[in-house]
Image (tube, rainbow, N blue to C red; front, side):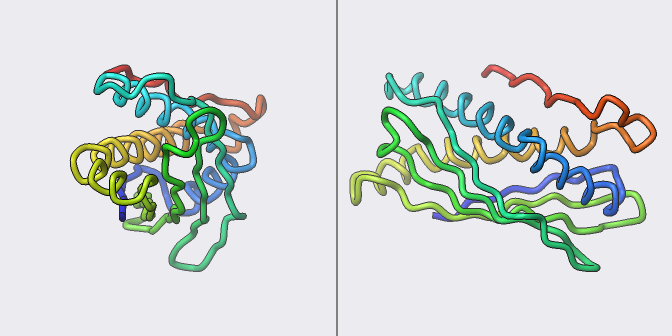
Length: 168
């Protein structure tokens, strides 16, 4: 199954590229993943899937850069109890300049529903919507981290945090 989303950023490509690299190195990409995943589990709990793991591991490659884009590959997987009930997402996060002070942040990924034919049927019925919402939430958190990071003159503390998750 394919899943993706995009967010327009009101920051230049050069700034967005540096900030995405900082998010990756600072562990905040993993934090955004955990928050987005936790909201997905809450959504699943409402439809009857209880007792699920809330632990997520995110592996990210180094940011690759070209003149017209920058990106990184990620693998997002659930760890702990219930991990076999969740797919592993392999995705590319990309930054594309869209103007002098605007950048497009995209995520394009693929996952295979677990549990064979039963998992595929569940995915078609409801779980793909949960996956899409989780990816949307994750990307919006990454976008907020890129947009809200202090500039070089403000970076004395070197720290910032992602916005708190919104509860459905």
